[in-house]
Image (cartoon, rainbow, N blue to C red; front, side, top):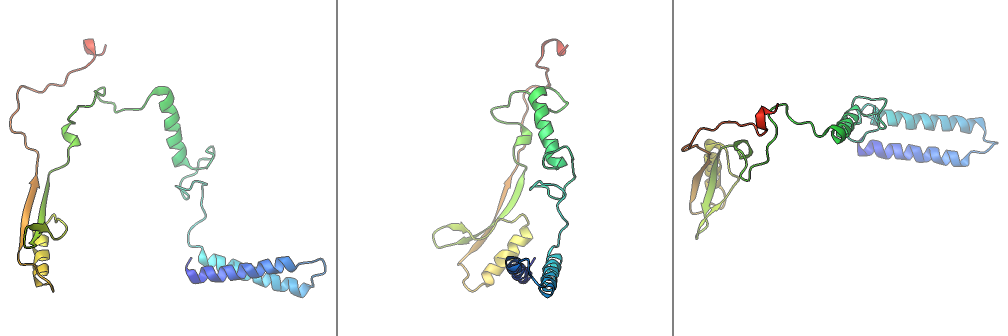
Length: 189
């Protein structure tokens, strides 16, 4: 609902409120017809302003989500989450179906480290040192276009440079043979 619609609806509702305060047992029929017209105008303004469907649940996070009649807020998504939490209280957390979880390594595992990145850093010479002059780019051509635009700008620096930054994890040498071992004696029998 935009501001103009909101203002018009507020005005119509205030007018209906004034009619409600003025009602008595001796209110003439002409006044009641006027009240009906004002109520109809307020309802029409409300119909124009409402752009979304009525919420199906009482959940603030998923107002239009699927309905579960047994849930207190009628939200199937939140009730599924609550049921999983209650199950975890009794059965323990549901883990992956693979091998049993081990204690976390002090240094992490390969999958925990960031993926290799290649970035191009545009830098300018400020008279004493090189400083970053723009956002690091993932594409070299885009970074070169950015520096060309900086050189053509109203206040170009004395010098610019493009620095290639590349981080990667490369296995240099392996000592021994990595073998997955079961932590339970007798193969978890």
